[in-house]
Length: 411
Image (cartoon, rainbow, N blue to C red; front, side, top):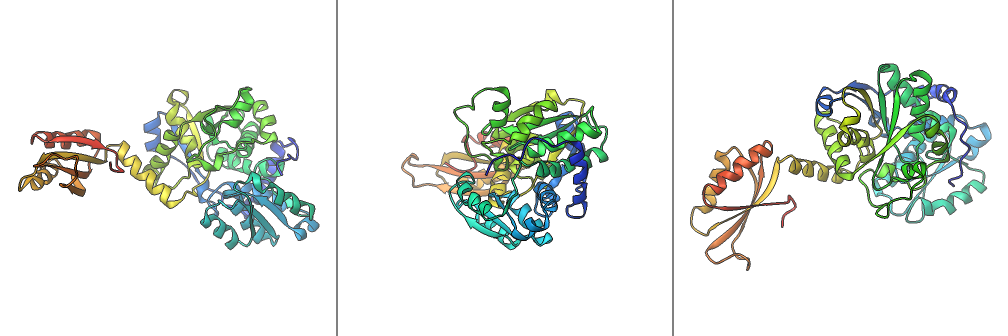
């Protein structure tokens, strides 16, 4: 299933992939004044989350499918994926009238399974991971179906490279383009585009610290023992990087860095708040790199490939709340005070007079850990920022109350 079709792909292949223009969105790219101010770089964002299926995967899938001959189209294609690649292949196969079978693990989110089926594909669920689905894929290949690999196929890589063609056509003066890296197909395609049409522009690939497998492979060092693990950037949580990327990225002079989960989470929150756009973890990884390594980008013109926006709404809600907590804008605190009439009213008044907004109040009077004639009052308080939070806390302490800051989740 993971056998490469060979490392032979070049700028001419990327230029030829412009034939997908009628099948995919030419997504916008725009300078972000606020992100530029935050990072110290001149930041341009390429919004691949605006593709129909929500990610750049539409491009590689479309280019691979267009190259099929009549017999291959009639027999159909197969792909193994739990996410964006599945939807990209299903969508474009349906549009081109090609039967598609998508093998998804039984652990795949129900919404992604349903979305893939709604796009016209036959969904086969097998195994706990995409890797465990390999046996099913091999059987379908033996029946004559054509594999559409998510990243280790020259036509797929060339299709992803059209992201770079568009970005550099719109912003030819970029000094560096920052790209998320899992299997390496997108990064390789963008690097080929840059080398062909903007050779002075560098490309930086970014992996999450929990899946640094391509970085480790190219640097000849073992994968850290704590990796892999669950990652917010599940779209690039790849253990087996592609042979094409391993061959091409060093030749193209692409540098690679890793970023921690905390930075990815911060970047998802910033893109939502600043750009009013939804980014999945993998899509936010380029911004995470700017936040983690500001010294590398100061004063440079930097293009960020926001590769996709398919994030679970519950996960996004959690990220937003955690972001508010980090910024000191939403805080749970515990106030211990005398159990006397009017105590709760005085606390609420103190918070309000200091400009805080009481979101939630829990009055704990009967718990065994609270001394008799004393009471714990848990408050969820909204403030403007961390400095404002400190003013609210000080207002409560001025009333001779003990104040303890808790995490937003509670005790």
